[in-house]
Length: 253
DNA sequence: AACACATGCAACCGCATCTGC
DNA sequence: GGCAGATGCGGTTGCATGTGT
Image (cartoon, rainbow, N blue to C red):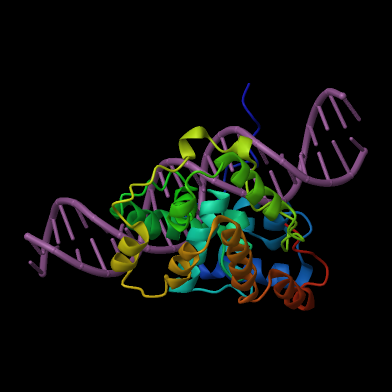
C-alpha cells in the first residue's frame, strides 16, 4: 500500500507557471498570508497543488530574493559550508539571505561540482576540501590524533553560541561515513588548481589558513565562519523585513 | 539556416520530519 | 505512544536556451 499522494492531482496544472498564476499566488499571500499550503491553491483560484505553490513562492516569488549569478565570495562560502554540512542545502541556504536551497543546489550541481571534478576532487565526499584544508595546514602536525582533532572541532562547533537557526554546523563523527575521510595527494594543491580554474584570486583566505597549526586552525575557522556569516545580512534581519509585509505568518523554517 | 548537443534552471517526486490530536 | 496530515528537504527530471558544427 503506497503513500497517499500529497493532493488530488487530477485536473491540476503542471509545468511552468504563467505570469497570471504568479500574480494570483502573490496577491493571495500578500493579502492573506500563509495559513495552510493545501488550502492556498483553492483559495487563490489556482489549479496547482499546495506543494507546487509553496515551492513557487519560496523559490521565485518571495520578496527579498536575490537573483542572478553567485559571486566568488558566495561560491567560496558555499564550498566551505558544503564541506561541513554536506548536501544539506536548506542549512547552507540559511547562510545566504535571498538565496534558495534550490538555487544553491543547482549551482553546486552545475558549476561547483564540475570545477571540483576538474580538480580531481570527489564532490560526493563533502568533507574532502575541509579535510584537505586541514591537512595542508598541518603538514608539521601529521602525527596528531585525528580522532581527537575531530572531537575538538566538533566541540568547537557545537559550543558555538548557535547559528541563526540553532543548527548543528558539524555532523557528528558517527554520521560521517568512513569513505569521507580525505585522502590527500600532496603532490597537488587543489586550492591552487581551483583558483586557476576559477580565475579567482580571492581564495587567499583558504591559503592563509593553511599556515597555522591545528589549534590555530580551529580559531581561524571560527573567525572566518563568523565573519563570513556576519558579512551578509542575517536571515533574522530578513525575517524582520518580511514581518512588515506579512505580519500574520512567520518564517521559522 | 538548420540541426545536434550541452547547459542551467524551474519544477516535480517521494521520503523524512514535524505537529497536533 | 501512535496515528494522520502538513510541511520540509534533497534528488532527479524535463524543458528552454545557448553554443558549436
